[in-house]
Structures are given as structure tokens and as C-alpha cells.
Length: 86
Image (cartoon, rainbow, N blue to C red; front, side, top):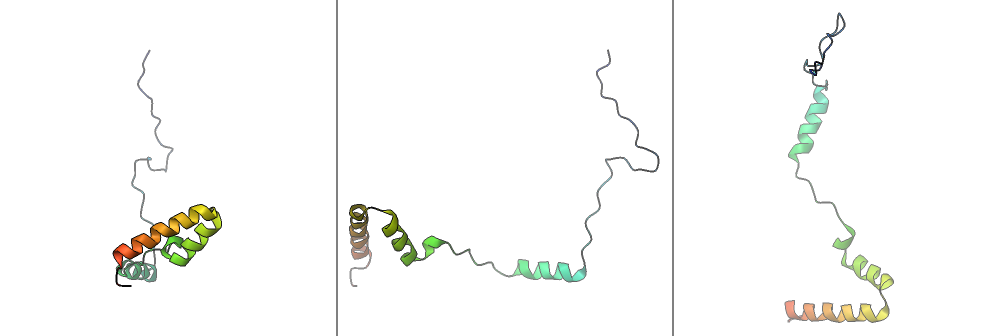
């Protein structure tokens, strides 16, 4: 029994599936806009933890008072180490 795969020729008037697919058409304005956007430096997305007040408020809501107070003491100690003159 022959185990080689059989291929059928493409129907008349059609190209075989191996033909290259053409690139999608774009207007000149679209390509200029895309180039201008690519040239501009992107700003990093702003995340909730970038805002210190949001973080503290969120933790205050989610933590028990004892755990939050312990964390606040750690933050205070870190601030004193990093900014002793303030």
C-alpha cells in the first residue's frame, strides 16, 4: 500500500496555494500617519501603583488595622533611612 500523500491539482483558472499572498493596500496618508506615530517616543502606561496616595488608600481599605500600622512603620523607617534631612 502506497503511503505517500496525494495532491490534487488546483482547479482550472486558480493558482496553487503556494503562490505568495500580496500585501494589503494602504493609502499614502495611512502610511505617513503610521510612520509619524512610530517616530514619536511612547510614554509608559500609567499604572495605579504609580500614584502613592492610591496605593496607601487601597492598602488601608484591604488590610487589617494592625497589618497596615506595621507596614506604615516599615515605610517610615525606610523614609528616615533614605531621607534623613527631611
